[in-house]
Image 1 (tube, rainbow, N blue to C red):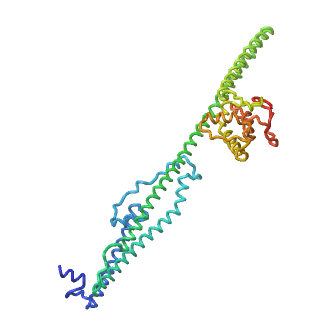
Image 2: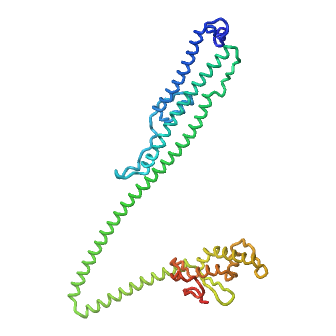
Image 3: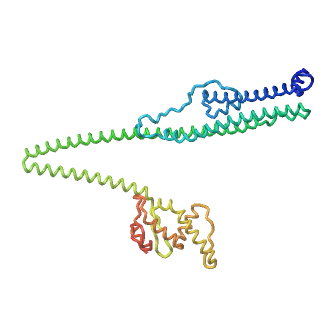
Length: 379
């Protein structure tokens, strides 16, 4: 036990005493060679990891201090979106991979830097250990504690970098999945287009068949008419035209009835808004429901501004909380704001059944009283 201690501390009678310069130099050389050997082993572990595990940085194995077992590259992402694509077209997945080439070069540079830093750190710690060993042989206090070594600090720093790298890898795989989903959507769209083209061709064929049947029917009618006398032909034609007219009239009536029902449901009731002077505007109920808040905001802003400018002649405007309070406020005061009146006139020209405005396209003249409309009263 004491002999081992003497050899480590260079005390007692032994061949490694500092008094023997030859043995001392051999010891220094041995320790230096050992540090280089440790650094080379670390480098070999990194290269083995890069070749066999797909760890492009080679940092994880270096930090853990272990050599992982070889694994097969089973988590490669299949390029399913290229099926059905032409050779000249690039999928989103292909474009994404091309954009990652620059990132891959940067990753390889960082891997080399990580290996270099770890080697230098181990060499530095080895040299520091040698220097401390030399100092202790000369009677200095042993300053080596094993804490906060450069190797440990470098390992922690690259471990943090590796964690960030893993997180970025997850994000890049997510981006790859998004690109694959886009490619899949394009493939589905192309399939839908093919189906649509097929349906279009079938419709054309059916139309041609119907036209052929109609042509044959017409020929038979012509042959039949030739065999009838003039009176029978007149009566037949009269009955045919009457039935056709009634059929078309019934169709038009049903269309108009359906259109009227739809318009009533879309428009709602007509609401009248009077200004207290015998004039009023008429707005459809559904238009008013969607635009009341806009009229209220403009009216409230103008009346508050007027009150702040002249508090003696303008009433104070309270803040309305409920929808009913706002609705009543607008109905009673809309004519007091020019901007609100302008909006009300515009709303009165909107027909929700057609979603078109009946305002005159002559934009050189602003809206004013008396514009023609089918649901406003001229002032």
